[in-house]
Every structure is written in structure tokens, then in C-alpha cells.
Length: 383
Image (cartoon, rainbow, N blue to C red):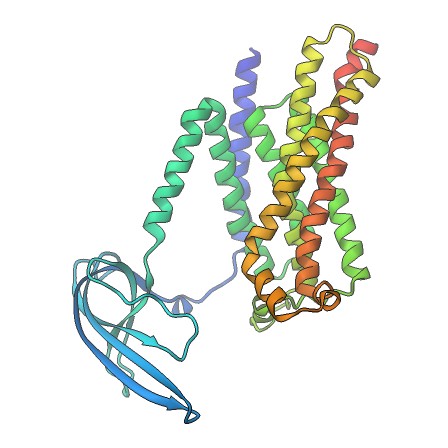
């Protein structure tokens, strides 16, 4: 009976999650005219033709080179699937970032440029097609989770899929639609916590303790982030990506400081969830095997487990942020020798905030989870 009840709850949570994604997308999806959508098509290079080279000077000093590589490609997607077209790749040394020159057999993306009265119609190289490789790698990753994790692995994959769909189909569109970022982030974060932990672990005391600890840690991290955003006088203009956001033609301009806050909260969510679940799971095992359960003993055990988790998860979070922005940090250190100025730059400050506040969320999640777990698992015993 208990197993059947658990399975029914599992199905209900899955159905609610599907409904949440569907309704959320309908409500938040921005209205993008079809004419504004670029048409890119998969293709494969079957032959390389002539390479036209043009050399010219820039300010009478630097020599620039512009290559126009002609090639034949077979379209493998869209309405032109199966057609062989003549296309070109522009390689201009004026630009700092250049794609590798195409070779026969390369899988690429091309776009069709219709004639406009001045230029003739043309197929042009857009980018290398990396989607297929990434997709296969992702499928292998998900397959390994299911194989090694069994039923729990399947539930993990399902919760991961829902998390990705919620982020990309509900949360991000809600920002572009002009909804309050603080409110959207809070709703999305709480739902991901409930959905993920319930699907992976079912509805039980262990899951309840993890949810409470997770929400407590994230909430404290969110409050600290809000206070520090004001204290540090952040503007939100961290790099060119944030500047471009201000140029978007939206009904409500995006609050860049809120974007920073949201990034800190969502970025810390996974690590806090891991710590909260680890503590509640371990304390659940202790509660089942401990002969004399008392609140103080359970709390002490929970804090001991939490201390072990703090070190590794804090390192994980900080190293993840440093690794993701390593190129930026290297450039800033090379071109800014003054450490006082360097660590006052908003770009560096935000990176530090993300790592430190996320780690503080982990720190506070430990006592919240331990306290609530100790109460829940000794509640019946003390009665």
C-alpha cells in the first residue's frame, strides 16, 4: 500500500511538473515575430573550391587579409534538405575571433541570403555544427546515470530534464517578458527544490528535512546577496554581455542588479541541495539504527556530518566559479597590477560574491537541516 501511494505521488509530481512547464511557457514566452527568426541549416562540406584572397592596409601600417573560401555543401536539414549548394566562408583578419577554415567532410551550419537588388543570392558559412556531438555526449551521460543509478538514476535524469525545461522555457522567458526577477527567481528556486527532491527521494521525512534545509540555506544566501548588492553599490554593468542586455527592445528594461542576485541564488542552489540531502539522508540512517535517539545526540551527529560536507562542497563551489571565469581573471591580472583596484572592480567583486555567498548558503544549510532533522527524527521517540 505504501509503495503504491509513493508511486501515485511520484506520478502526480511528474504531471504537475509537466503542467508547470507548459503553463509557465504559455504565460511567459515572449512574442517573437517569425520574420525575426534566423534560418540556419545543417550541411556537410563535400568539396572545397577556389580561395579568393584580398590584402589591404589599415592606417598605412597593418596589413589585413580577407579570404573568401568557396565550397560545395550538401544541406541535411530544412526545406532544402538533400540539395547541393555553392556557399562561401569569409575569413577576415580584421576580427580577433576567427573560425577555423573549413575542410572537406566538416559538418557546418549555413544560412541563405536572398538577393536584395545589390547582392546576388548566396549561401554563407555560419558556424561549425557542434550540436550533434554535444547531444550524443549528453545522451551518454544520461544513459550512464540510469545504468549506474537504476531507478534512482532514472528519477535523477527526469528531475534534471524538468530543471532544464523550467530554466529555459519558464524562467528565462519570464525575464524577457518583464516579470519581476526577484519573484520569478524565488518561485522557480522553490519549485525546483520541491520537484527535484520529491522525484528523486519520494515523499518522506528525509525529503522533508532536505527541503527545509535547502530552502533555509538558499533564503539566507539570497538575503545576504540583496544586502551586499546595496552596500557595494553594484550597477550591474559587469561586462559587455550585461551592456547588451540594456540595448534589448523590451517593454520593461532588465534590472541588471537583479540578474546578478538571481545568478548567485541559482548558482548556489545545486551545492546547497547536495549538502542538505546528504545530511538528512545520513541522519535518517542514524535514526533507524540508533538505539537511544535524543534530540541533542541527533543534532550533534548532524553537525558532525555537515562539517565534513562543508569543506568539500565549498571548495567545489569556489573552484567551479574560478574555472568558469579563468580567462577573464587571467586578463584582468595581466593588465591590472594594482590589487586594490583589481579587487574593487565590479566584475571581480561579483565573481567573489557568487563564490562566497554560495558557500555561506552551504554553511547555513547545515545547522538548519541538522536542527530540523533532529526534531523530526526524535519527535515520536520523545513523546
